[in-house]
Amino acid sequence: MDDTFSAFLQRSLSENDIVFLVGPSAVGKSAFAFEAARRLNGEVVSCDAMQVYREVDIASDKPSAFMRAAVPHHLLDVVSVEEDFNAAKYRVLAVAAIEDIVRRKRKAVVCGGSGMYMAAILDGMFESVPVPDGVREALLERAGHEGLGVLYRRLGEVDPDAAAKINANDRVRIVRALEVFEASGIPISRLQRTRDGLWGKQPIALIGLERPREELYARAEARVDAMFAAGLVDEVRGLMARKLSSSAARLIGIPEVKGFLDGEYGEEKAVELMKLHTRHYIKRQMTWFRKDQRIKWSALV
Figure (cartoon, rainbow, N blue to C red):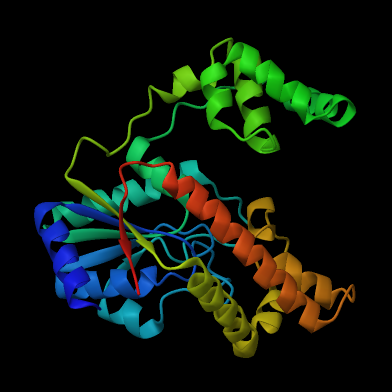
């Protein structure tokens, strides 16, 4: 760990109960979180959408057995790939872990690349609105017949604040915002302002790790190669014998390798696709994190 950055982390952890180390895949978050926690009497709380699954080790690039033995890690291996998991479930477990760490007078180092999971902890989540059967299906059917743009324009009419924050091509979030409005008559943006998170309640430092884009992509692609060398194909083959939940089935690595196992293309193509989708994911991560003005960025070189 660079001495300057180490001093920065030490100061942040000394002044705050909780430190978030966030950033894109392959930037080096796990190693820095481990060192920070090891040096400063801390424990790591994973903020990763893949590492929660017990059966996904290689594809999720979990911290090594050595790291996990030397420093307590939380929110790893908490559910099976056969179980659906989401930000709301994650928030309950993560907040409980963080509060327990702080209560024991240790430092909580939250580490990961899931912007949605980070926001769930910091900003909370609004109470779920019951949506009558058929509302979502009707919205999806309309999008299919008339185009997603029709739904996005409708969202702009009923909830301009939400529309301003949602990409016009983000089908999932557009439909979610509209179904909440159709079910309750209340704009989802108004409901979101009632969320109850940790931000503002406890001293929190929010640190973003970054590298030059080409270096980051090179690290990500090298990691994909290492995953295949470590047995990713066999891991996914084992997963295919299970009934994967919808959330687990979308994890990067699973659909790409499944296509190879199903005979749709060769292993080389699977590697190529996984690298491509990882780069796309990194772009989405950086887009999400860059919008959060609370994050203090530190370049790794």
